Amino acid sequence: MEHKVINSVEALLFGSGRPIRLSEIKSILENTGLSVELSEIKRAINDLEMRYEGTSLKVTEVASGYRLQIKEDHGHILSALWNEKAPRVSKALMETISIIAYKQPVTRGDIEDIRGITVSTRIIRSLLERNWIKVSGYRDVPGRPTLYVTTKDFLNDLNLKSISELPELPEIEENEEKDILSQAI
Image (cartoon, rainbow, N blue to C red; front, side):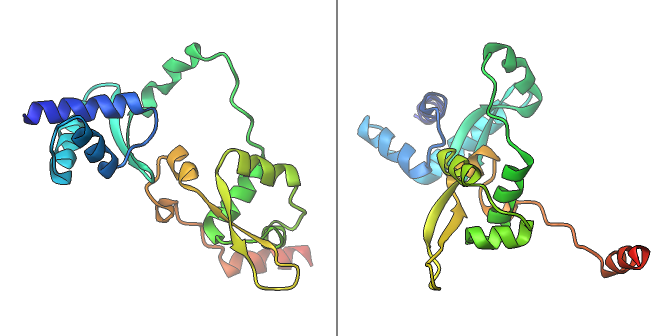
């Protein structure tokens, strides 16, 4: 029975094409007549992680659930299968998504204050189309500017479970700022 659970979970992770939650796996298995507990599914995932040690595959937990994926050191091999180029990510887009990720929820004005320049509508639209950000509400000030936050798709694309897994921002030392100012004068 346990072997059947492991193989069924493996088939779901392989065939889903997207991250899948434990509760979703449980529901699917129960709909096929296989009664399992969440703890059994978690054990099956742990067994699969051990099974894939030393292979090109791994089970990864991201914000939306678990997925079966190729290990990073084998990713370059797959590039020959896809001739299409991934959309370029500009420096401005990376700065904008970084500000949203670290300071969320933020308005376009907040982003412009931090970056020091206007945020292009194209950048916001691109982030919305990629589903990396979403509208979370509106700030209760005149003009009611839109508040943006990151999405689970953003976390999934970065292989993160939560926003707290983002790397720490480097601290700017005040001495460095004073040295730069004194050199300028």
